[in-house]
Image (cartoon, rainbow, N blue to C red; front, side):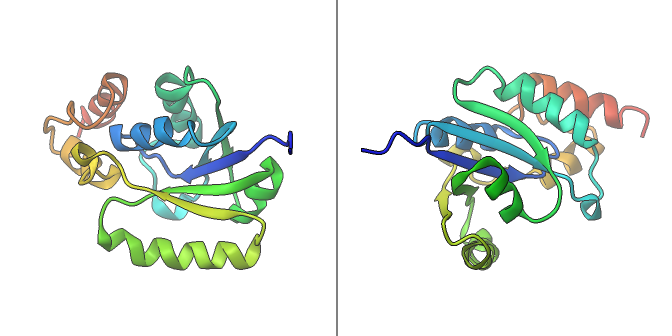
Length: 164
């Protein structure tokens, strides 16, 4: 019997983290010895929050979940997979529309890191339509995002868009 730690990585921009992300974190961490929640440093997406702010938000919302480690990475995902010794990449699938892109990414990651599998988790039904992009759009227009993000994140977004 192997005593090697089974580590998974859950990459994302988490700009901002939503209740759907947290739902996936809580369910994925039960499947592995450790879940590395990894903020991708991809400035081509024009993030609202800096990597440091997103790491702090993740610490506030997921830092107390046993088995979760929060990190950032830049470059290709397969490099982070190797760095953290991950045996799996966890990805959330909200709808069929997510599947095509995620499927292509999973196949490419399999080519780059064949020792690592991609695991797709669907969020709970109440979060199946929630996306960070939609949350930012609602927050920009000063709409109510309280049902979709933790209170601390709602406050961060309120302050970010208060002057706009």
